[in-house]
Length: 257
Image 1: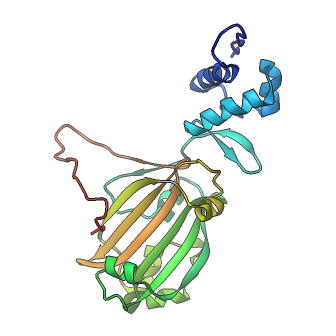
Image 2: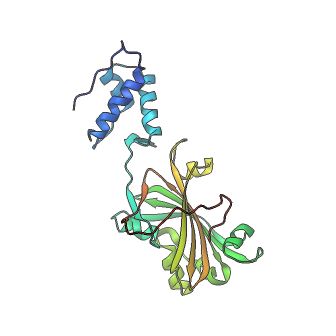
Image 3: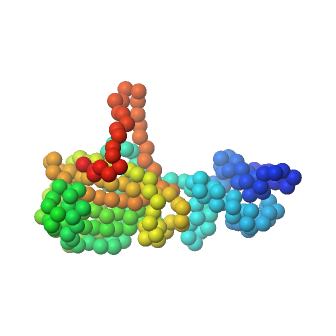
């Protein structure tokens, strides 16, 4: 596909003209195999590297491109989709799409955490088990996941190897139960410096937070918070005109149920 030459006689900045043409070429599917390097764009459009970087930065901010460590700029395409309205396992969701899921465990142990205990409906001094992992899909960070469970139930999990397994599978095999219903809240977030470092995100890249309450037999057995890369994962919902769903106003300070 031909590139459109930039017009230096126009009042529109060169970087904006370049952004517009790159956006056109992206929409036409030109960069399916590889996105050009900054140097290649500089030579193709006869512009400075500063002009190229401004155009690419704008496309990054719009979510069309993303910077990947060791690979440079690539076209941003969500790799995984998850239907809403189902109690799912991230482990199963990834592996069902033919991608190996693995985890790097950051912490696994007993804790006392009053806010987490409150989410689980337990006394502030109740002992909990917490598991924090970096979830990898195809060897690349996808999510930073931390779960809290009542120690009276989940203490057998302390002996589990979570490098390549699902929490719910281990919970069922070692503790005799797994969530049978739950509630999840999805919120766009600005990742912290620690989260960006662990997820290999550049500053300004998108992420969202998933807060989940898992129940078994009506009892809350899990509170989980997951920060997930917005460039690799997306949620989808099927609907019909017969659905009775509605927008529900929730105070910003309200806890998950």
